[in-house]
Image (cartoon, rainbow, N blue to C red):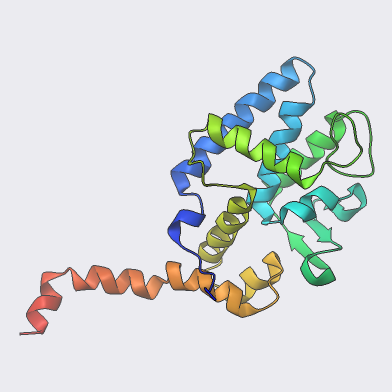
Amino acid sequence: MSTWTITPDKFLKPQEVKALRQVLHADALLAKSKGRQIGYRDMVILELALSTGLRVGEISKLRIDDLQLTRKSSSLIVRSGKGGKTRTVQFGSGLRKILREYLEYRSPASDFVFRSERQDQMTTNAIQKVFKKKAKKAGLPKRYSIHTLRHTFCTMIYKASGYNLRMVSQMAGHASQNTSALYAAVLSPDVEKAVEKLESQEFLDSLL
């Protein structure tokens, strides 16, 4: 039986994140200028995925009451994560602003944060289609899925936290820190330093 690993082709590169966000915000601006909901909602869904690493099922089930959008607390509660576990995920002021503006703009109201045109709750398939549509428009590889944004979040928070595996594990809701350690294997700062040192003339001279 094969063992799952994280490899660089499973998460977005910084320039790909930038390209995707450019598409998302351009489409959201156009949708809002025409009084439409969908393009604006889709931007918020994918920004949420990038900034919190929520699984697609967790995004689908997210309710208004799960959000804490005060100045002192920018966070959300995942009440039915993998294995039925509950966790709190903090996020920055940028996403807080996006969510606040979205909740004021969206119509009609629903207990769920994201609704479709016909239902109060978006399905996981519908969310996946949103990602695929925007990813294609941004010129991203076809192999990417909505879950790619979860991997992308984990790699970004790992670097932003100074390579703190415990933080990755807590925020992503990993059942085991061994899962989080997979990101360390591909993003290790020690490896980066070692391979750079390997190419240096000084190091080669030291081996003589």
